[in-house]
Each structure stands twice: as structure tokens, then as C-alpha cells.
Length: 455
Image (cartoon, rainbow, N blue to C red):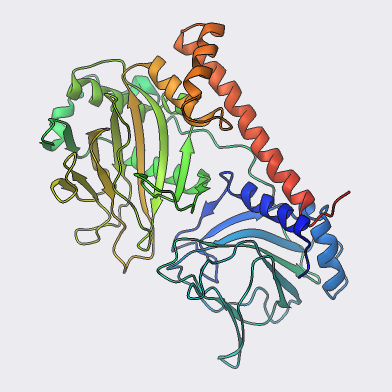
């Protein structure tokens, strides 16, 4: 019981701020040595300004507890199915302490989540953490996190800090800026003789005549590779493990990308031509560009991408290592009968599923023997740029309003600046940058205020 109720509220606010879209995923080739894939490096110099740091400095032995030059700090999310390993945070030539603050509480007694400590290759001590409890140990001691149980949909969110006695740690800074989307060769580079029908593998329709197209080999290998590299090296993910009711996809890790940058890429030129040729309509424009990440233990759900709209979703599969039998595809259903499958699309590298947004569907997690994640790149498009910008604004702005109130705000903005989609898009970019800045300031302030007492 280190923290008062007021301080716990501050830590709860920190946990909320950490979910603002800054998480990095480390796949099976780059996973940290203890096997926890989701991390958010923390600026130790920023953390050292907080009352929480002062509290830790009072209880941590050693001579460097008051400085940040020897500190590695990171937020982490321990998820069911993580490939956890026994690990020590420092080697035999190093010394110091590791401190873990648990920011979330697993809900039930059978949710697991304990920490095991080893001596002579056997378990020496096991600790079951509570929310806002702190565990501190010599960084040479081998430890292992027990991931949450398979029935647990929530993650174990923690702040892990290692304070070395002598080792200087390379400073890290919070990821305030998002790297720009790769342009490749530019929009003008698309082949003028491009024919989408040459890439069409199959087409199915629902009973309501809603189409599902499957296309292969739309993109060059270098475009796919550059996209994958961008998504892996530059993507910052939002994390949402809330137990939402209703028809949501339940994808808990999503990396959003800026549509106005994406439309300058050669990839969008190919997608736009494909949409024009297959639907017979010109003018499509994206309002949602994102990378969805799923692993074998995730629980995705049947959902629609829109209601009462004539829109499409362009879904690109991005796992070159997947082969038949690895699962991870997408299943499409009839409108009111989820026991009637219209189409099951196999996850194949570079394959595209293009479908009407009102078709019920669900992503499928990859096979349990795969430790790496399923990547899919989804582009949702409206019939015009004006509609798309309006949809994007309502998705990303005015978050303090109910969904029913957002169209009123959009109407007011159109009355103010006019209905020119380019002007509206410029206004959205301005507003959304302010939203990102506010989100970042919230994270900074939450780190500085962590553990504070009432003034």
C-alpha cells in the first residue's frame, strides 16, 4: 500500500495515457529476451521529474538511484500466449536493480499473472502482484513473467525500470512524431495499361448482391516489402482491451496512418484504379488507413465495417511466411445468418480481399504454432473525397461528444469553411495534429505527475 487513493488516480491516468497510440510490437525475431513483445520505451529523464521517481529513489539501494543516465524504463503489456522466457536484466559484470510497477489488475483469481524468480534453475520465489504494487529485485536474478490465462482478454500493463550502478543507458525519447507514409515512386508511376481484371482470382456475392472480390499480384514485390518495413519499423499501435459489447471486430492492436499522406503513394494509385475498374465508379477516397495486428490467442469477432453506406474495404494480407494451413484468413457471412458462410479468403502474401462494407466478416487468428503476428493492411473508402473527409473527422475528432452529436459539429464546420474537400481535409489535418499534440502532452504530464500527492 504505497499509494493513496489520489495517487492511484494519477497512476490510472498514466495507464490511460499510455494507450494513446505509441506502442511498438517486436516480432519473434526481435522480441526482447524475456519474451514480452509489446513495449513503449519511456524517456527516463522525463520520468525522473515525477514524485514516483522520488519514491523509488528512497527505496532503491545504490548510488545512482537519483539520476536518469543509468536507467532503462519502458511500459509493457503482457498478453496471453506471450512466448515468455527466463531472463536477467543485467549480466554477471553489471549490477543494479529492476523495479516493476503493476498498473492493471487481472480480474479473476484464475487469471494467472505471477512473477517467478529462479535460483539454480529452479523456482525460488513466486509473487502474485496486485494493482499498484511494486516488485524490486537485483537485476542479476533470473525472472519469468507468467502470462495471463487463455480465458483472460485483458493484458497485464506494467512499468518496468532497471537502474544500473555503472552502465550508461542510451537515452530514449517519446515518439512524438509519426513517420511519413512511404511514397514509393509516386502516383504517376502506375502502369497506364493496368487492368484490374487480370488480377481477379474470384468473386462471390451475398444474397443481397453485395460483392467480395479476391485479387492476387496487384503490387510489385518491392512495394510490398517497403510497406512491410514501414509498418514494422514505424508503426505505433493503439491498444484497446476494453470488453466492448456489440458488433465490434475486437482487434486490440491497430496502427492508424494518415490518409492525406497515403493518397500521395503509388500504392493508392493502384488501389484507386482497381476500385474504379471493378466498381465502375470514380471518385473513391480513403477515410481509414490502418494496420491490424492479430496473434493466435486473440479473439476476433463478426462485424460490419459500416451501416447504410455504399462503401468498400480493401484488405491486403502482409505475411510472406504464411502458407496453406497457417489459418489467419477472413470469413464472410450472409447478412442475417452467421452460420451461412459466403466466402473464406485464405491469407496469402500480397492477396487482396475487396468487399462491400456492409458484409459481415471476421478476421481469423493465425495457427497456434505460429509465434509471429498476422498483419493486414485495411483501407476503407467512401464514394467521394467530401464524404471521406467527413467520415474521418467524425472518427477522429470531437471525442468528448456522443456519436449522434458529431454530424452537427461537421455541419457547423462546413458552414464555416465551405464544402471544398481540400479545405476540409486541410482543416482536419490541423485539428488532428492538435489532437496528437494534446495526447502527447497528456502522456508527458501523466509521467511527470505519476505518484503525486494533492497540493
